[in-house]
Structure formats: C-alpha cells, structure tokens
Image 1 (cartoon, one colour):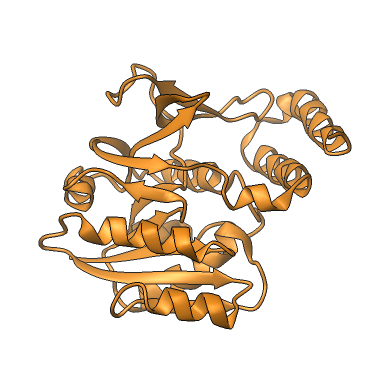
Image 2: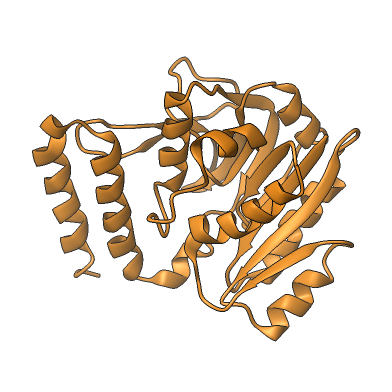
Length: 261
C-alpha cells in the first residue's frame, strides 16, 4: 500500500525535520512511503535543509504562506496523481512515540484514523482523544484525558495535527477547504466526511507527542482574527440557523479580544 506523508512547514524547518525523522524511524513494514513537505514562504535556506532531511523527499515550495489547508492541498493533489492509497497529514511540531505507529493506524481499517495525541498542559501530561462540536456557539472543544484509553464520549472530529485519510475520501468530498486559512479546517473536513458516509476512528495504540502552537505563536494577535474568520465560516457551513445569535455573539467576542493584550 502506498502512503503519502504530508507536512506543512512555515519557518520552523528544524522541527519539521525532527517530526519526519521520528516517523521514518517507526515500523512501516508493507507500506510504501512518499514524503511531501510544503514549504510556505519558502527560502533557499529552508528548502536546502528540508531537501537533505530524508532521501527522496519531495519539497513543494510556495512563495507565500497558504496556511494549513492551502499548503496541504498542494501536496494532496500531487500525492493523488501518484495513485496513493492513504494520505497522512502531520503537524511539523509533533513527534511519533509508538514503534508501530503507521502500521497500527492503517490496521484500524476506518476511512479517517487519528492517533492519541499527548501534550503538556500546565506541566502535566494529558491525552487528546478527539474533538466535539458545540452546535450552539460553534466553539469546538477537545476530549482530554489523563489516560490514552478511549473516552466514553465519542468525538465529532479529529484534529489535523495528525490524521490518516483514505484516498477515496478526497475523491468523493474534495480537498481541505482553503477558505480556512488556519483553524477549523480539520473539523470541517471530518464533518463533511461523516455526512458522506465515511467512518472515523481513534487508534489508541498510536501515540504522538505535540509541542503545540510553535507555528501559530509567530502570528501574535493576528491569530485571533484568523480564528474568528474561521469560526464564522465553520458556523455558517455546519450550524443551524437557530444558533446564529449565539455563534455571532461569540464571534464578536473573539474579534474584540484581538484588540487587547
């Protein structure tokens, strides 16, 4: 089976390289891997470092920052032309921790598969087991546990920090919505896939460590405006009209918050 690994780099090639190498060290028996890195706001320095990270890696340079969805789509289109069976989207600030990471993810058999994502919150290790949609305010929350075992509440979507997707999902519902520069594109994609009848599942045997926000921290207060724009787009696409007074009020709160330190 052919699997495309896709990562979007933005001014953090050291972490991107560490991410890809951690994945390459994991067991991937029976899988033919193609690595793609989309280099947003590409420079000669970043291209050279990335091209030397792994043998045979494909670097797709973008002169401008296309965001996560736009950047990922450049590589997804290229991968689909190569007739891949799966696409794995990965954030560059993640590290694979389980030995059989890819094999376990593929073996789950679902159309969309996510690993358990581990990170530090106030110095304590916690586990992200997926996300849930608030259909009143449009504020999506993550299912957080102190254990990597599956939670009793089922997620509505999985984060794009790491998501394994069968090629036929893209063939049927299209690519990521580039109207989301950042934030909510993962929830939007998962909800679209569910509406089209595709299955999604958490793989408790696959563990990924996430450093969190190393790229978005470069955006400063601008990220709140980006968040507000994405929130509104998501709500208009997926929330009922009756919720509009509530999600519009929350959206205004996000925009006002961007004016204060």
